[in-house]
Image (cartoon, rainbow, N blue to C red):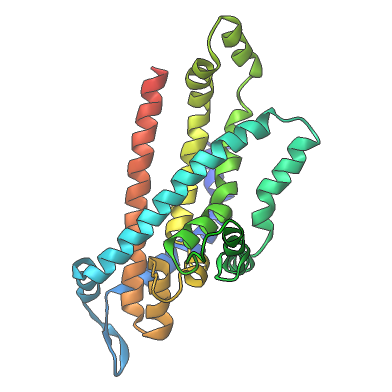
Length: 286
């Protein structure tokens, strides 16, 4: 086998995956980008022969879209923080369990992924509604009905429930690489449990936390079903606005511009967060 053939073999083996990646991701993104620069006339619809920056100017200058983007990223950040605070200890407990309890808890963690997101959203709407179980519990302790449905609280609670497995699994995977004997050695050398956790466990967990938080933030910022069902018509997020522009207003170019703006902003936030956390991780190892 010649040297040229050996160099080309990995590319030939990767060709089916590259073709699939190009056809299912790159081509739709390119078509969406082209659509976002098309002019739009309410009377005649999309004008594919006319290119304009009007839609991007509208998104970047209108305070209505500023508010929606701020709400979207604020909710995504809160959901990510709560998933880190809940999912990291849960993964640590899971890693220290023995069978069959580990398998049972793992099934409980993965249970939200086994149910449709629409079903979960309707379940939370029944729990958080005016006549739901949560308000019934408040009534038992003498508190009046609390409005939670169609608020940011409902969206955050439901998103945390949906996104938590995406935080637990990466952290749990990172903990599988940690030898429990290292913790025991630190404790035998008179290190306190807090010092052992801070100096040994947390540096090993940090890559999993980084991976999980990036996944959770990206999915929460682009989620549609839960904000649409639990946020209502007034509590808009970017994905629901894109849906409205495509199907209600029929302004496809503006919807494409909003979607691509969300994609770029999401990537910018995630890459900045990744660089910040990785820098601190490398500094802690050094």
